Image (cartoon, rainbow, N blue to C red; front, side, top):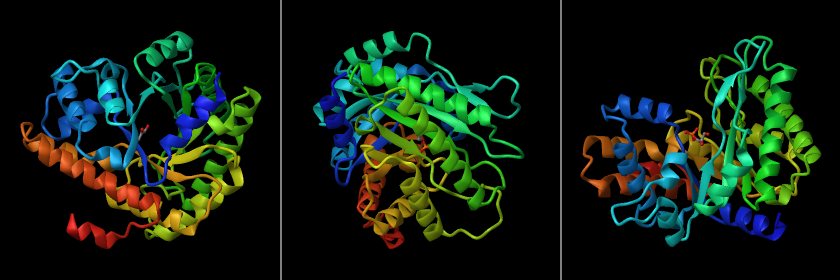
Length: 339
Ligand code: 13P
């Protein structure tokens, strides 16, 4: 493990005004998104779509790196360059999703545990050769009646810590992602409680496995009410409770925190991030690692006309720019009028 390399990579990932673009959808998720817009999901359409994302002109001003999927890190553009090489040439950091998905947690109905530890050391070695400098693992926590269980918190945190240790062994920055799902009708207070507990259990496990916080990035959901909760939207409360929860439960030596968008609209995702950064200063940079909230308009534009990359790329860069502003606390909803 080279701690200096880990620290350098991690701090570049959350450099001022920059965040991460997640383009690591599994084939199943990709198919769902493509199907909704009437696009066939094949190896070639995925290659084409991801090709336009990694090569969007100007995106590196706002995006420090992208998370690729196993298939994508091996794919090449029309000139024979791998997507990892395309990113590096533009000054962006290639990352890779290394978990193999969330599966039913045995003896615990409605709960999941993320798998992918078997053979991970060898896979990480290969990904490093393919250019990956950080790696993501997503754990899923569901809020419901009597859940999450202690077993669910513990099993997911333990897997995250084992994967993070394997990453750091090879000087790859772990991007540890516990996602508390928005599904359900729970209150924002309940989400706060579950997020706090998730973080406490996670950081205890990371410490036990010897993972260095200065070489780790946390990717997490915001403290939000469930999708079906009837309370009025209150972006300021989301920002305040999220910052409070993180400040109380995340070690201050951590290299940085980025958020997933998890089904928020692109505008809400930008607004929440901006409001959080207006509350500062915080012990760590707070930035984005959005998938849907940056890709949505670009994917729609590309689905309408697959031959017009320019329009889709402009839509992508425009959302990346909004989030870059948000990471500095400078985004406002009024900016959407000029998009
Ligand atoms: P969303 O921003 O679409 O939630 O995706 C981010 C991600 O990488 C989830 O694992």
